[in-house]
Every structure is written in structure tokens, then in C-alpha cells.
Image (cartoon, rainbow, N blue to C red; front, side, top):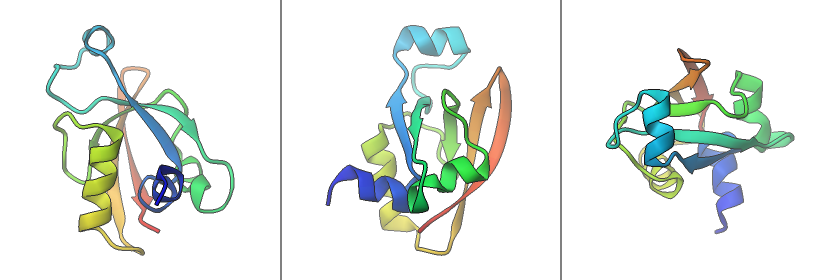
Length: 108
């Protein structure tokens, strides 16, 4: 299965990229913690779930489903698809303008 359908199921349509070490330092984040920038958001159907929940482009995901260690988008997708089920919600914590924002995202 391609990544786009999995993004709809587990990430609500978010496209995430890992911050490099200089971006992490600028955001005040350590090298070993989660720091995935929302590069894009789906607009329709299952892929619009994150946008509808309040996620914005350029938010930085720092914790999801209780995990805050550094991981790639692929690793996070794998974790969520193996450990969560459609109909459940997961808590996601984002940095937005230096503030932490908590959003609950649906698994689909």
C-alpha cells in the first residue's frame, strides 16, 4: 500500500518531514526527540481529518500517542497502524508559534 492512503488512515492526511539538527536547535528541541513539520495537509475526505481537527501547515509534531522520541514519518505510520484501530483517537502535541497545542486525531 502506498503512503498516501496510510496517511489518511493514521495521520489524518498530514505530510510530515523530520526537522534537521539546525532546525531543531532553532525550535529549542533536542536531537533525540520527535520533531516532524507538517509540510502539507489533505483537503478532502479521510485526508482532511487533521485539518478539520485544527492542525495547520508548519506545525511541528513533538508527541503522538504518548511517544516523543525521534522517529520518521514512516516509523510513526507503522506504530499507529500496528497499535491503533479505526474509530480510536490519538493525542498529538504540536509546537505552533512556540506554544504547545494538543489535538485529538481520529484513526480511520
